[in-house]
Image 1 (cartoon, rainbow, N blue to C red):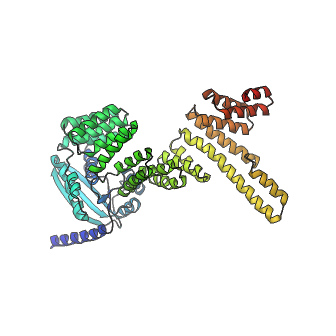
Image 2: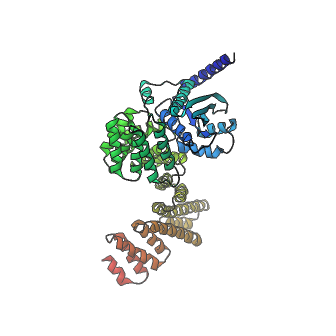
Image 3: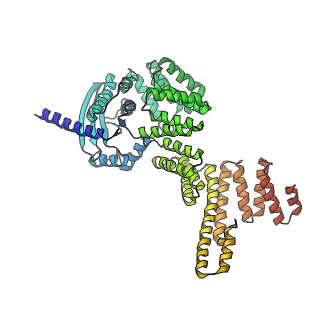
Length: 522
């Protein structure tokens, strides 16, 4: 009787889930980290190994959507995952903040060479259990555990698996558990704050030694070389895998990245297209296709590709950033803001997203928002000269806007009181580029500008534009010695800048050095 109840209950769950699937394209699932119930350094790698294996398999199934690991980690940190028991309340909050409908969690232990894996499938809308199971396999059948979880998930959700996806699912990473262990340990080392590259490469090589046909390990070794900017070595690894396994998408992806770095856009395009053909669910391939097409000025095609990337993975911040770049290159800055803002919301710790968003706000004359984003960018990367430079310009523009608004309000008041003289004064002020605000406030504005430009030069000593603007700022503050110093410094870097000679001549005229002024005019 109990068995039949369980079957009926499971059937009802499947019907409910299938009805939900019919209403949408993808099942949104959060794969939570696994726990080792009996911590043992010999088997601790299995927690990460299970997660890697499942993510690898699920990545080829278009019926599932898994949040980016970075996005999910942020959510897990916010809800205090791992600090308290995983109960309905925690699962509900994970579902709410990660915008998923189901969570997969579990724990395992190894005893006498047998892995016992406890899996829990939960409804993320209310935290209740959908289904739980306990799987047991010998350690040398580790991959079978992962395959059983995938089968359970497909059965529970009722998603359709296409023939192509079935073929991709059947792809075997390796049949060697010891090789996979070395592979996962390399990944774990690479994810540590102070990863030792020598150890990472050594572990990947160990994996290859244990299974010479472990092509994923060859690919990842190539990625290590790529990240170290050793492109010939990386290319060697990718080509080796492509020759041995031409229907494996990842080495084409790696090789495409090298071609993109080298500016070989046609070759990069060809490789990313190949990735898309092999695995149509690979959102990163569409993202990089969009990037290459943008660089080739094929903006409409780039947008189509980037739109597809965000449809497959709506949490992939780089795709929105690249989409913003399309409009930035087209000089449609207000439209670019929309995509840069989304990227920054998805990955708020990325300084570049805030910098480009601040840049677009500046170009759109939304100076208050520009300053806010530039300050965020500087906080995340305090040594970026361009953020300081743009901040210096924005401080000035914001002050000018405030002065114009103030003048306009005074003009309205003058109209109300029919004061013709006041109207004339304000008209003159609106057409004057100099700041005419309160002297104390004006001094603070110039001081803030000087600090920003000085920081820009600190981190990029040959930054001509920043040096020139620092000279202009000191000139306005009547710090003539400093202004002269920085005008001359600009000319030592580039003696063809006519405007600098004119400003230096103006300074010499103001300080009574007419001979030097004439020399600059010559």
